[in-house]
Length: 267
Ligand SMILES: C[S@@+](CC[C@H](N)C(=O)[O-])C[C@H]1O[C@@H](n2cnc3c(N)ncnc32)[C@H](O)[C@@H]1O
Image (tube, rainbow, N blue to C red; front, side):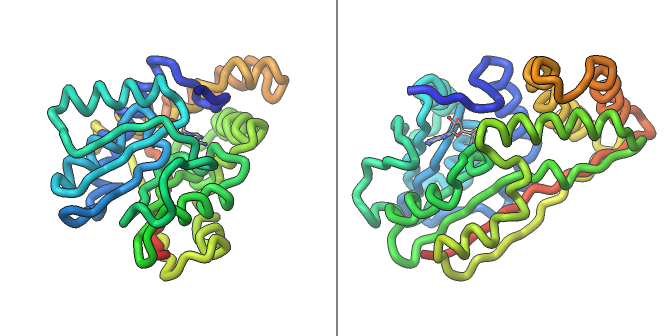
């Protein structure tokens, strides 16, 4: 099974996702822990970039990690096996047509998936069905509107806007972070709590300059180059300038800010 998804399934994208997860582990996952013997569904596990942290942080919980892409599931399985992790089972599943019995899981975890779906509310409702009463859902998403940097650049903003439009044209919403609270409330979860997680990068944090500004965010913008130019969203000169300006923020006097949103709620 495969899917038309804005970032694609290339090897480069797999490296980007793993790099993204490694760099952001502390910011996003330091407070994600599941109790011994609990059953956790990771929906949209991709190549396993989050799975490795989730399963390592909660070694006595059991994870079922699923994705609609068999290719991604195979990569994730290889990654987890190579890491010697044994508390994860992988399955190919569509979030909108899950084969699990209702109320099968103690917890659900979803990261960087809702932003790609045209029906995020229905996805939450489908995930809620397989969650036990009293079980928790954790959702982590980005929001490209939260991005600002120095030196500022109209061209860089225009290039980022291409990514937002490309994702929207595929039915997704890369500005979904700000919508997690209303979406979870609309899906009738209780105790919805949203925590913004800002990534602030300057030259004093070289691992984030490289791992986040260059290899995560700018690489993601560069990923829609062909689509942006072919559709006439932007002209070649502005695009090239915008990408140069994003890299310019990684120089010693540059800074970069982005906010992720982490939500938790109870069924
Ligand atoms: C950006 S990736 C995120 C992967 C992983 N959660 C991470 O943070 O690295 C989004 C993933 O959602 C998966 N996906 C999209 N629609 C899906 C669906 N209907 N059911 C299951 N997985 C889906 C894609 O195949 C892709 O692997």
